[in-house]
Image (cartoon, rainbow, N blue to C red; front, side, top):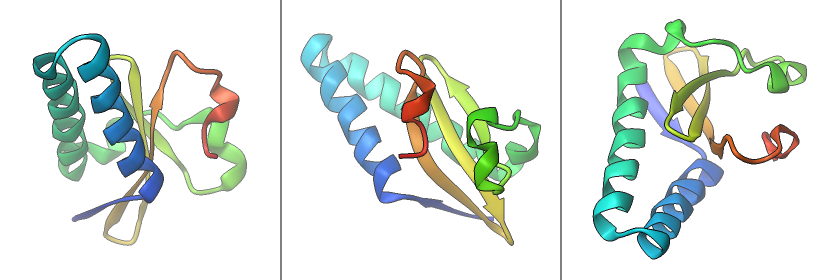
Length: 99
């Protein structure tokens, strides 16, 4: 199974790293980024175990979410590909999801 990250997901991952590097440390930023990347890789085996993301139901793509710390990895499955569309900070207003 192939995993594809959207430009938004890639940008958010970089922002998450930069933010934690600035406010905490390189070690903390690397640990958080590694946790997110590991969870994304784990979707190959366990993509169906996660709950549907109710805020994205209107898009009719059956978006699911994997929660890692304060972040939601938002994705959907199409054919044999997992599309990661967003890495969303759960401390934000959910209306910002799916921009």
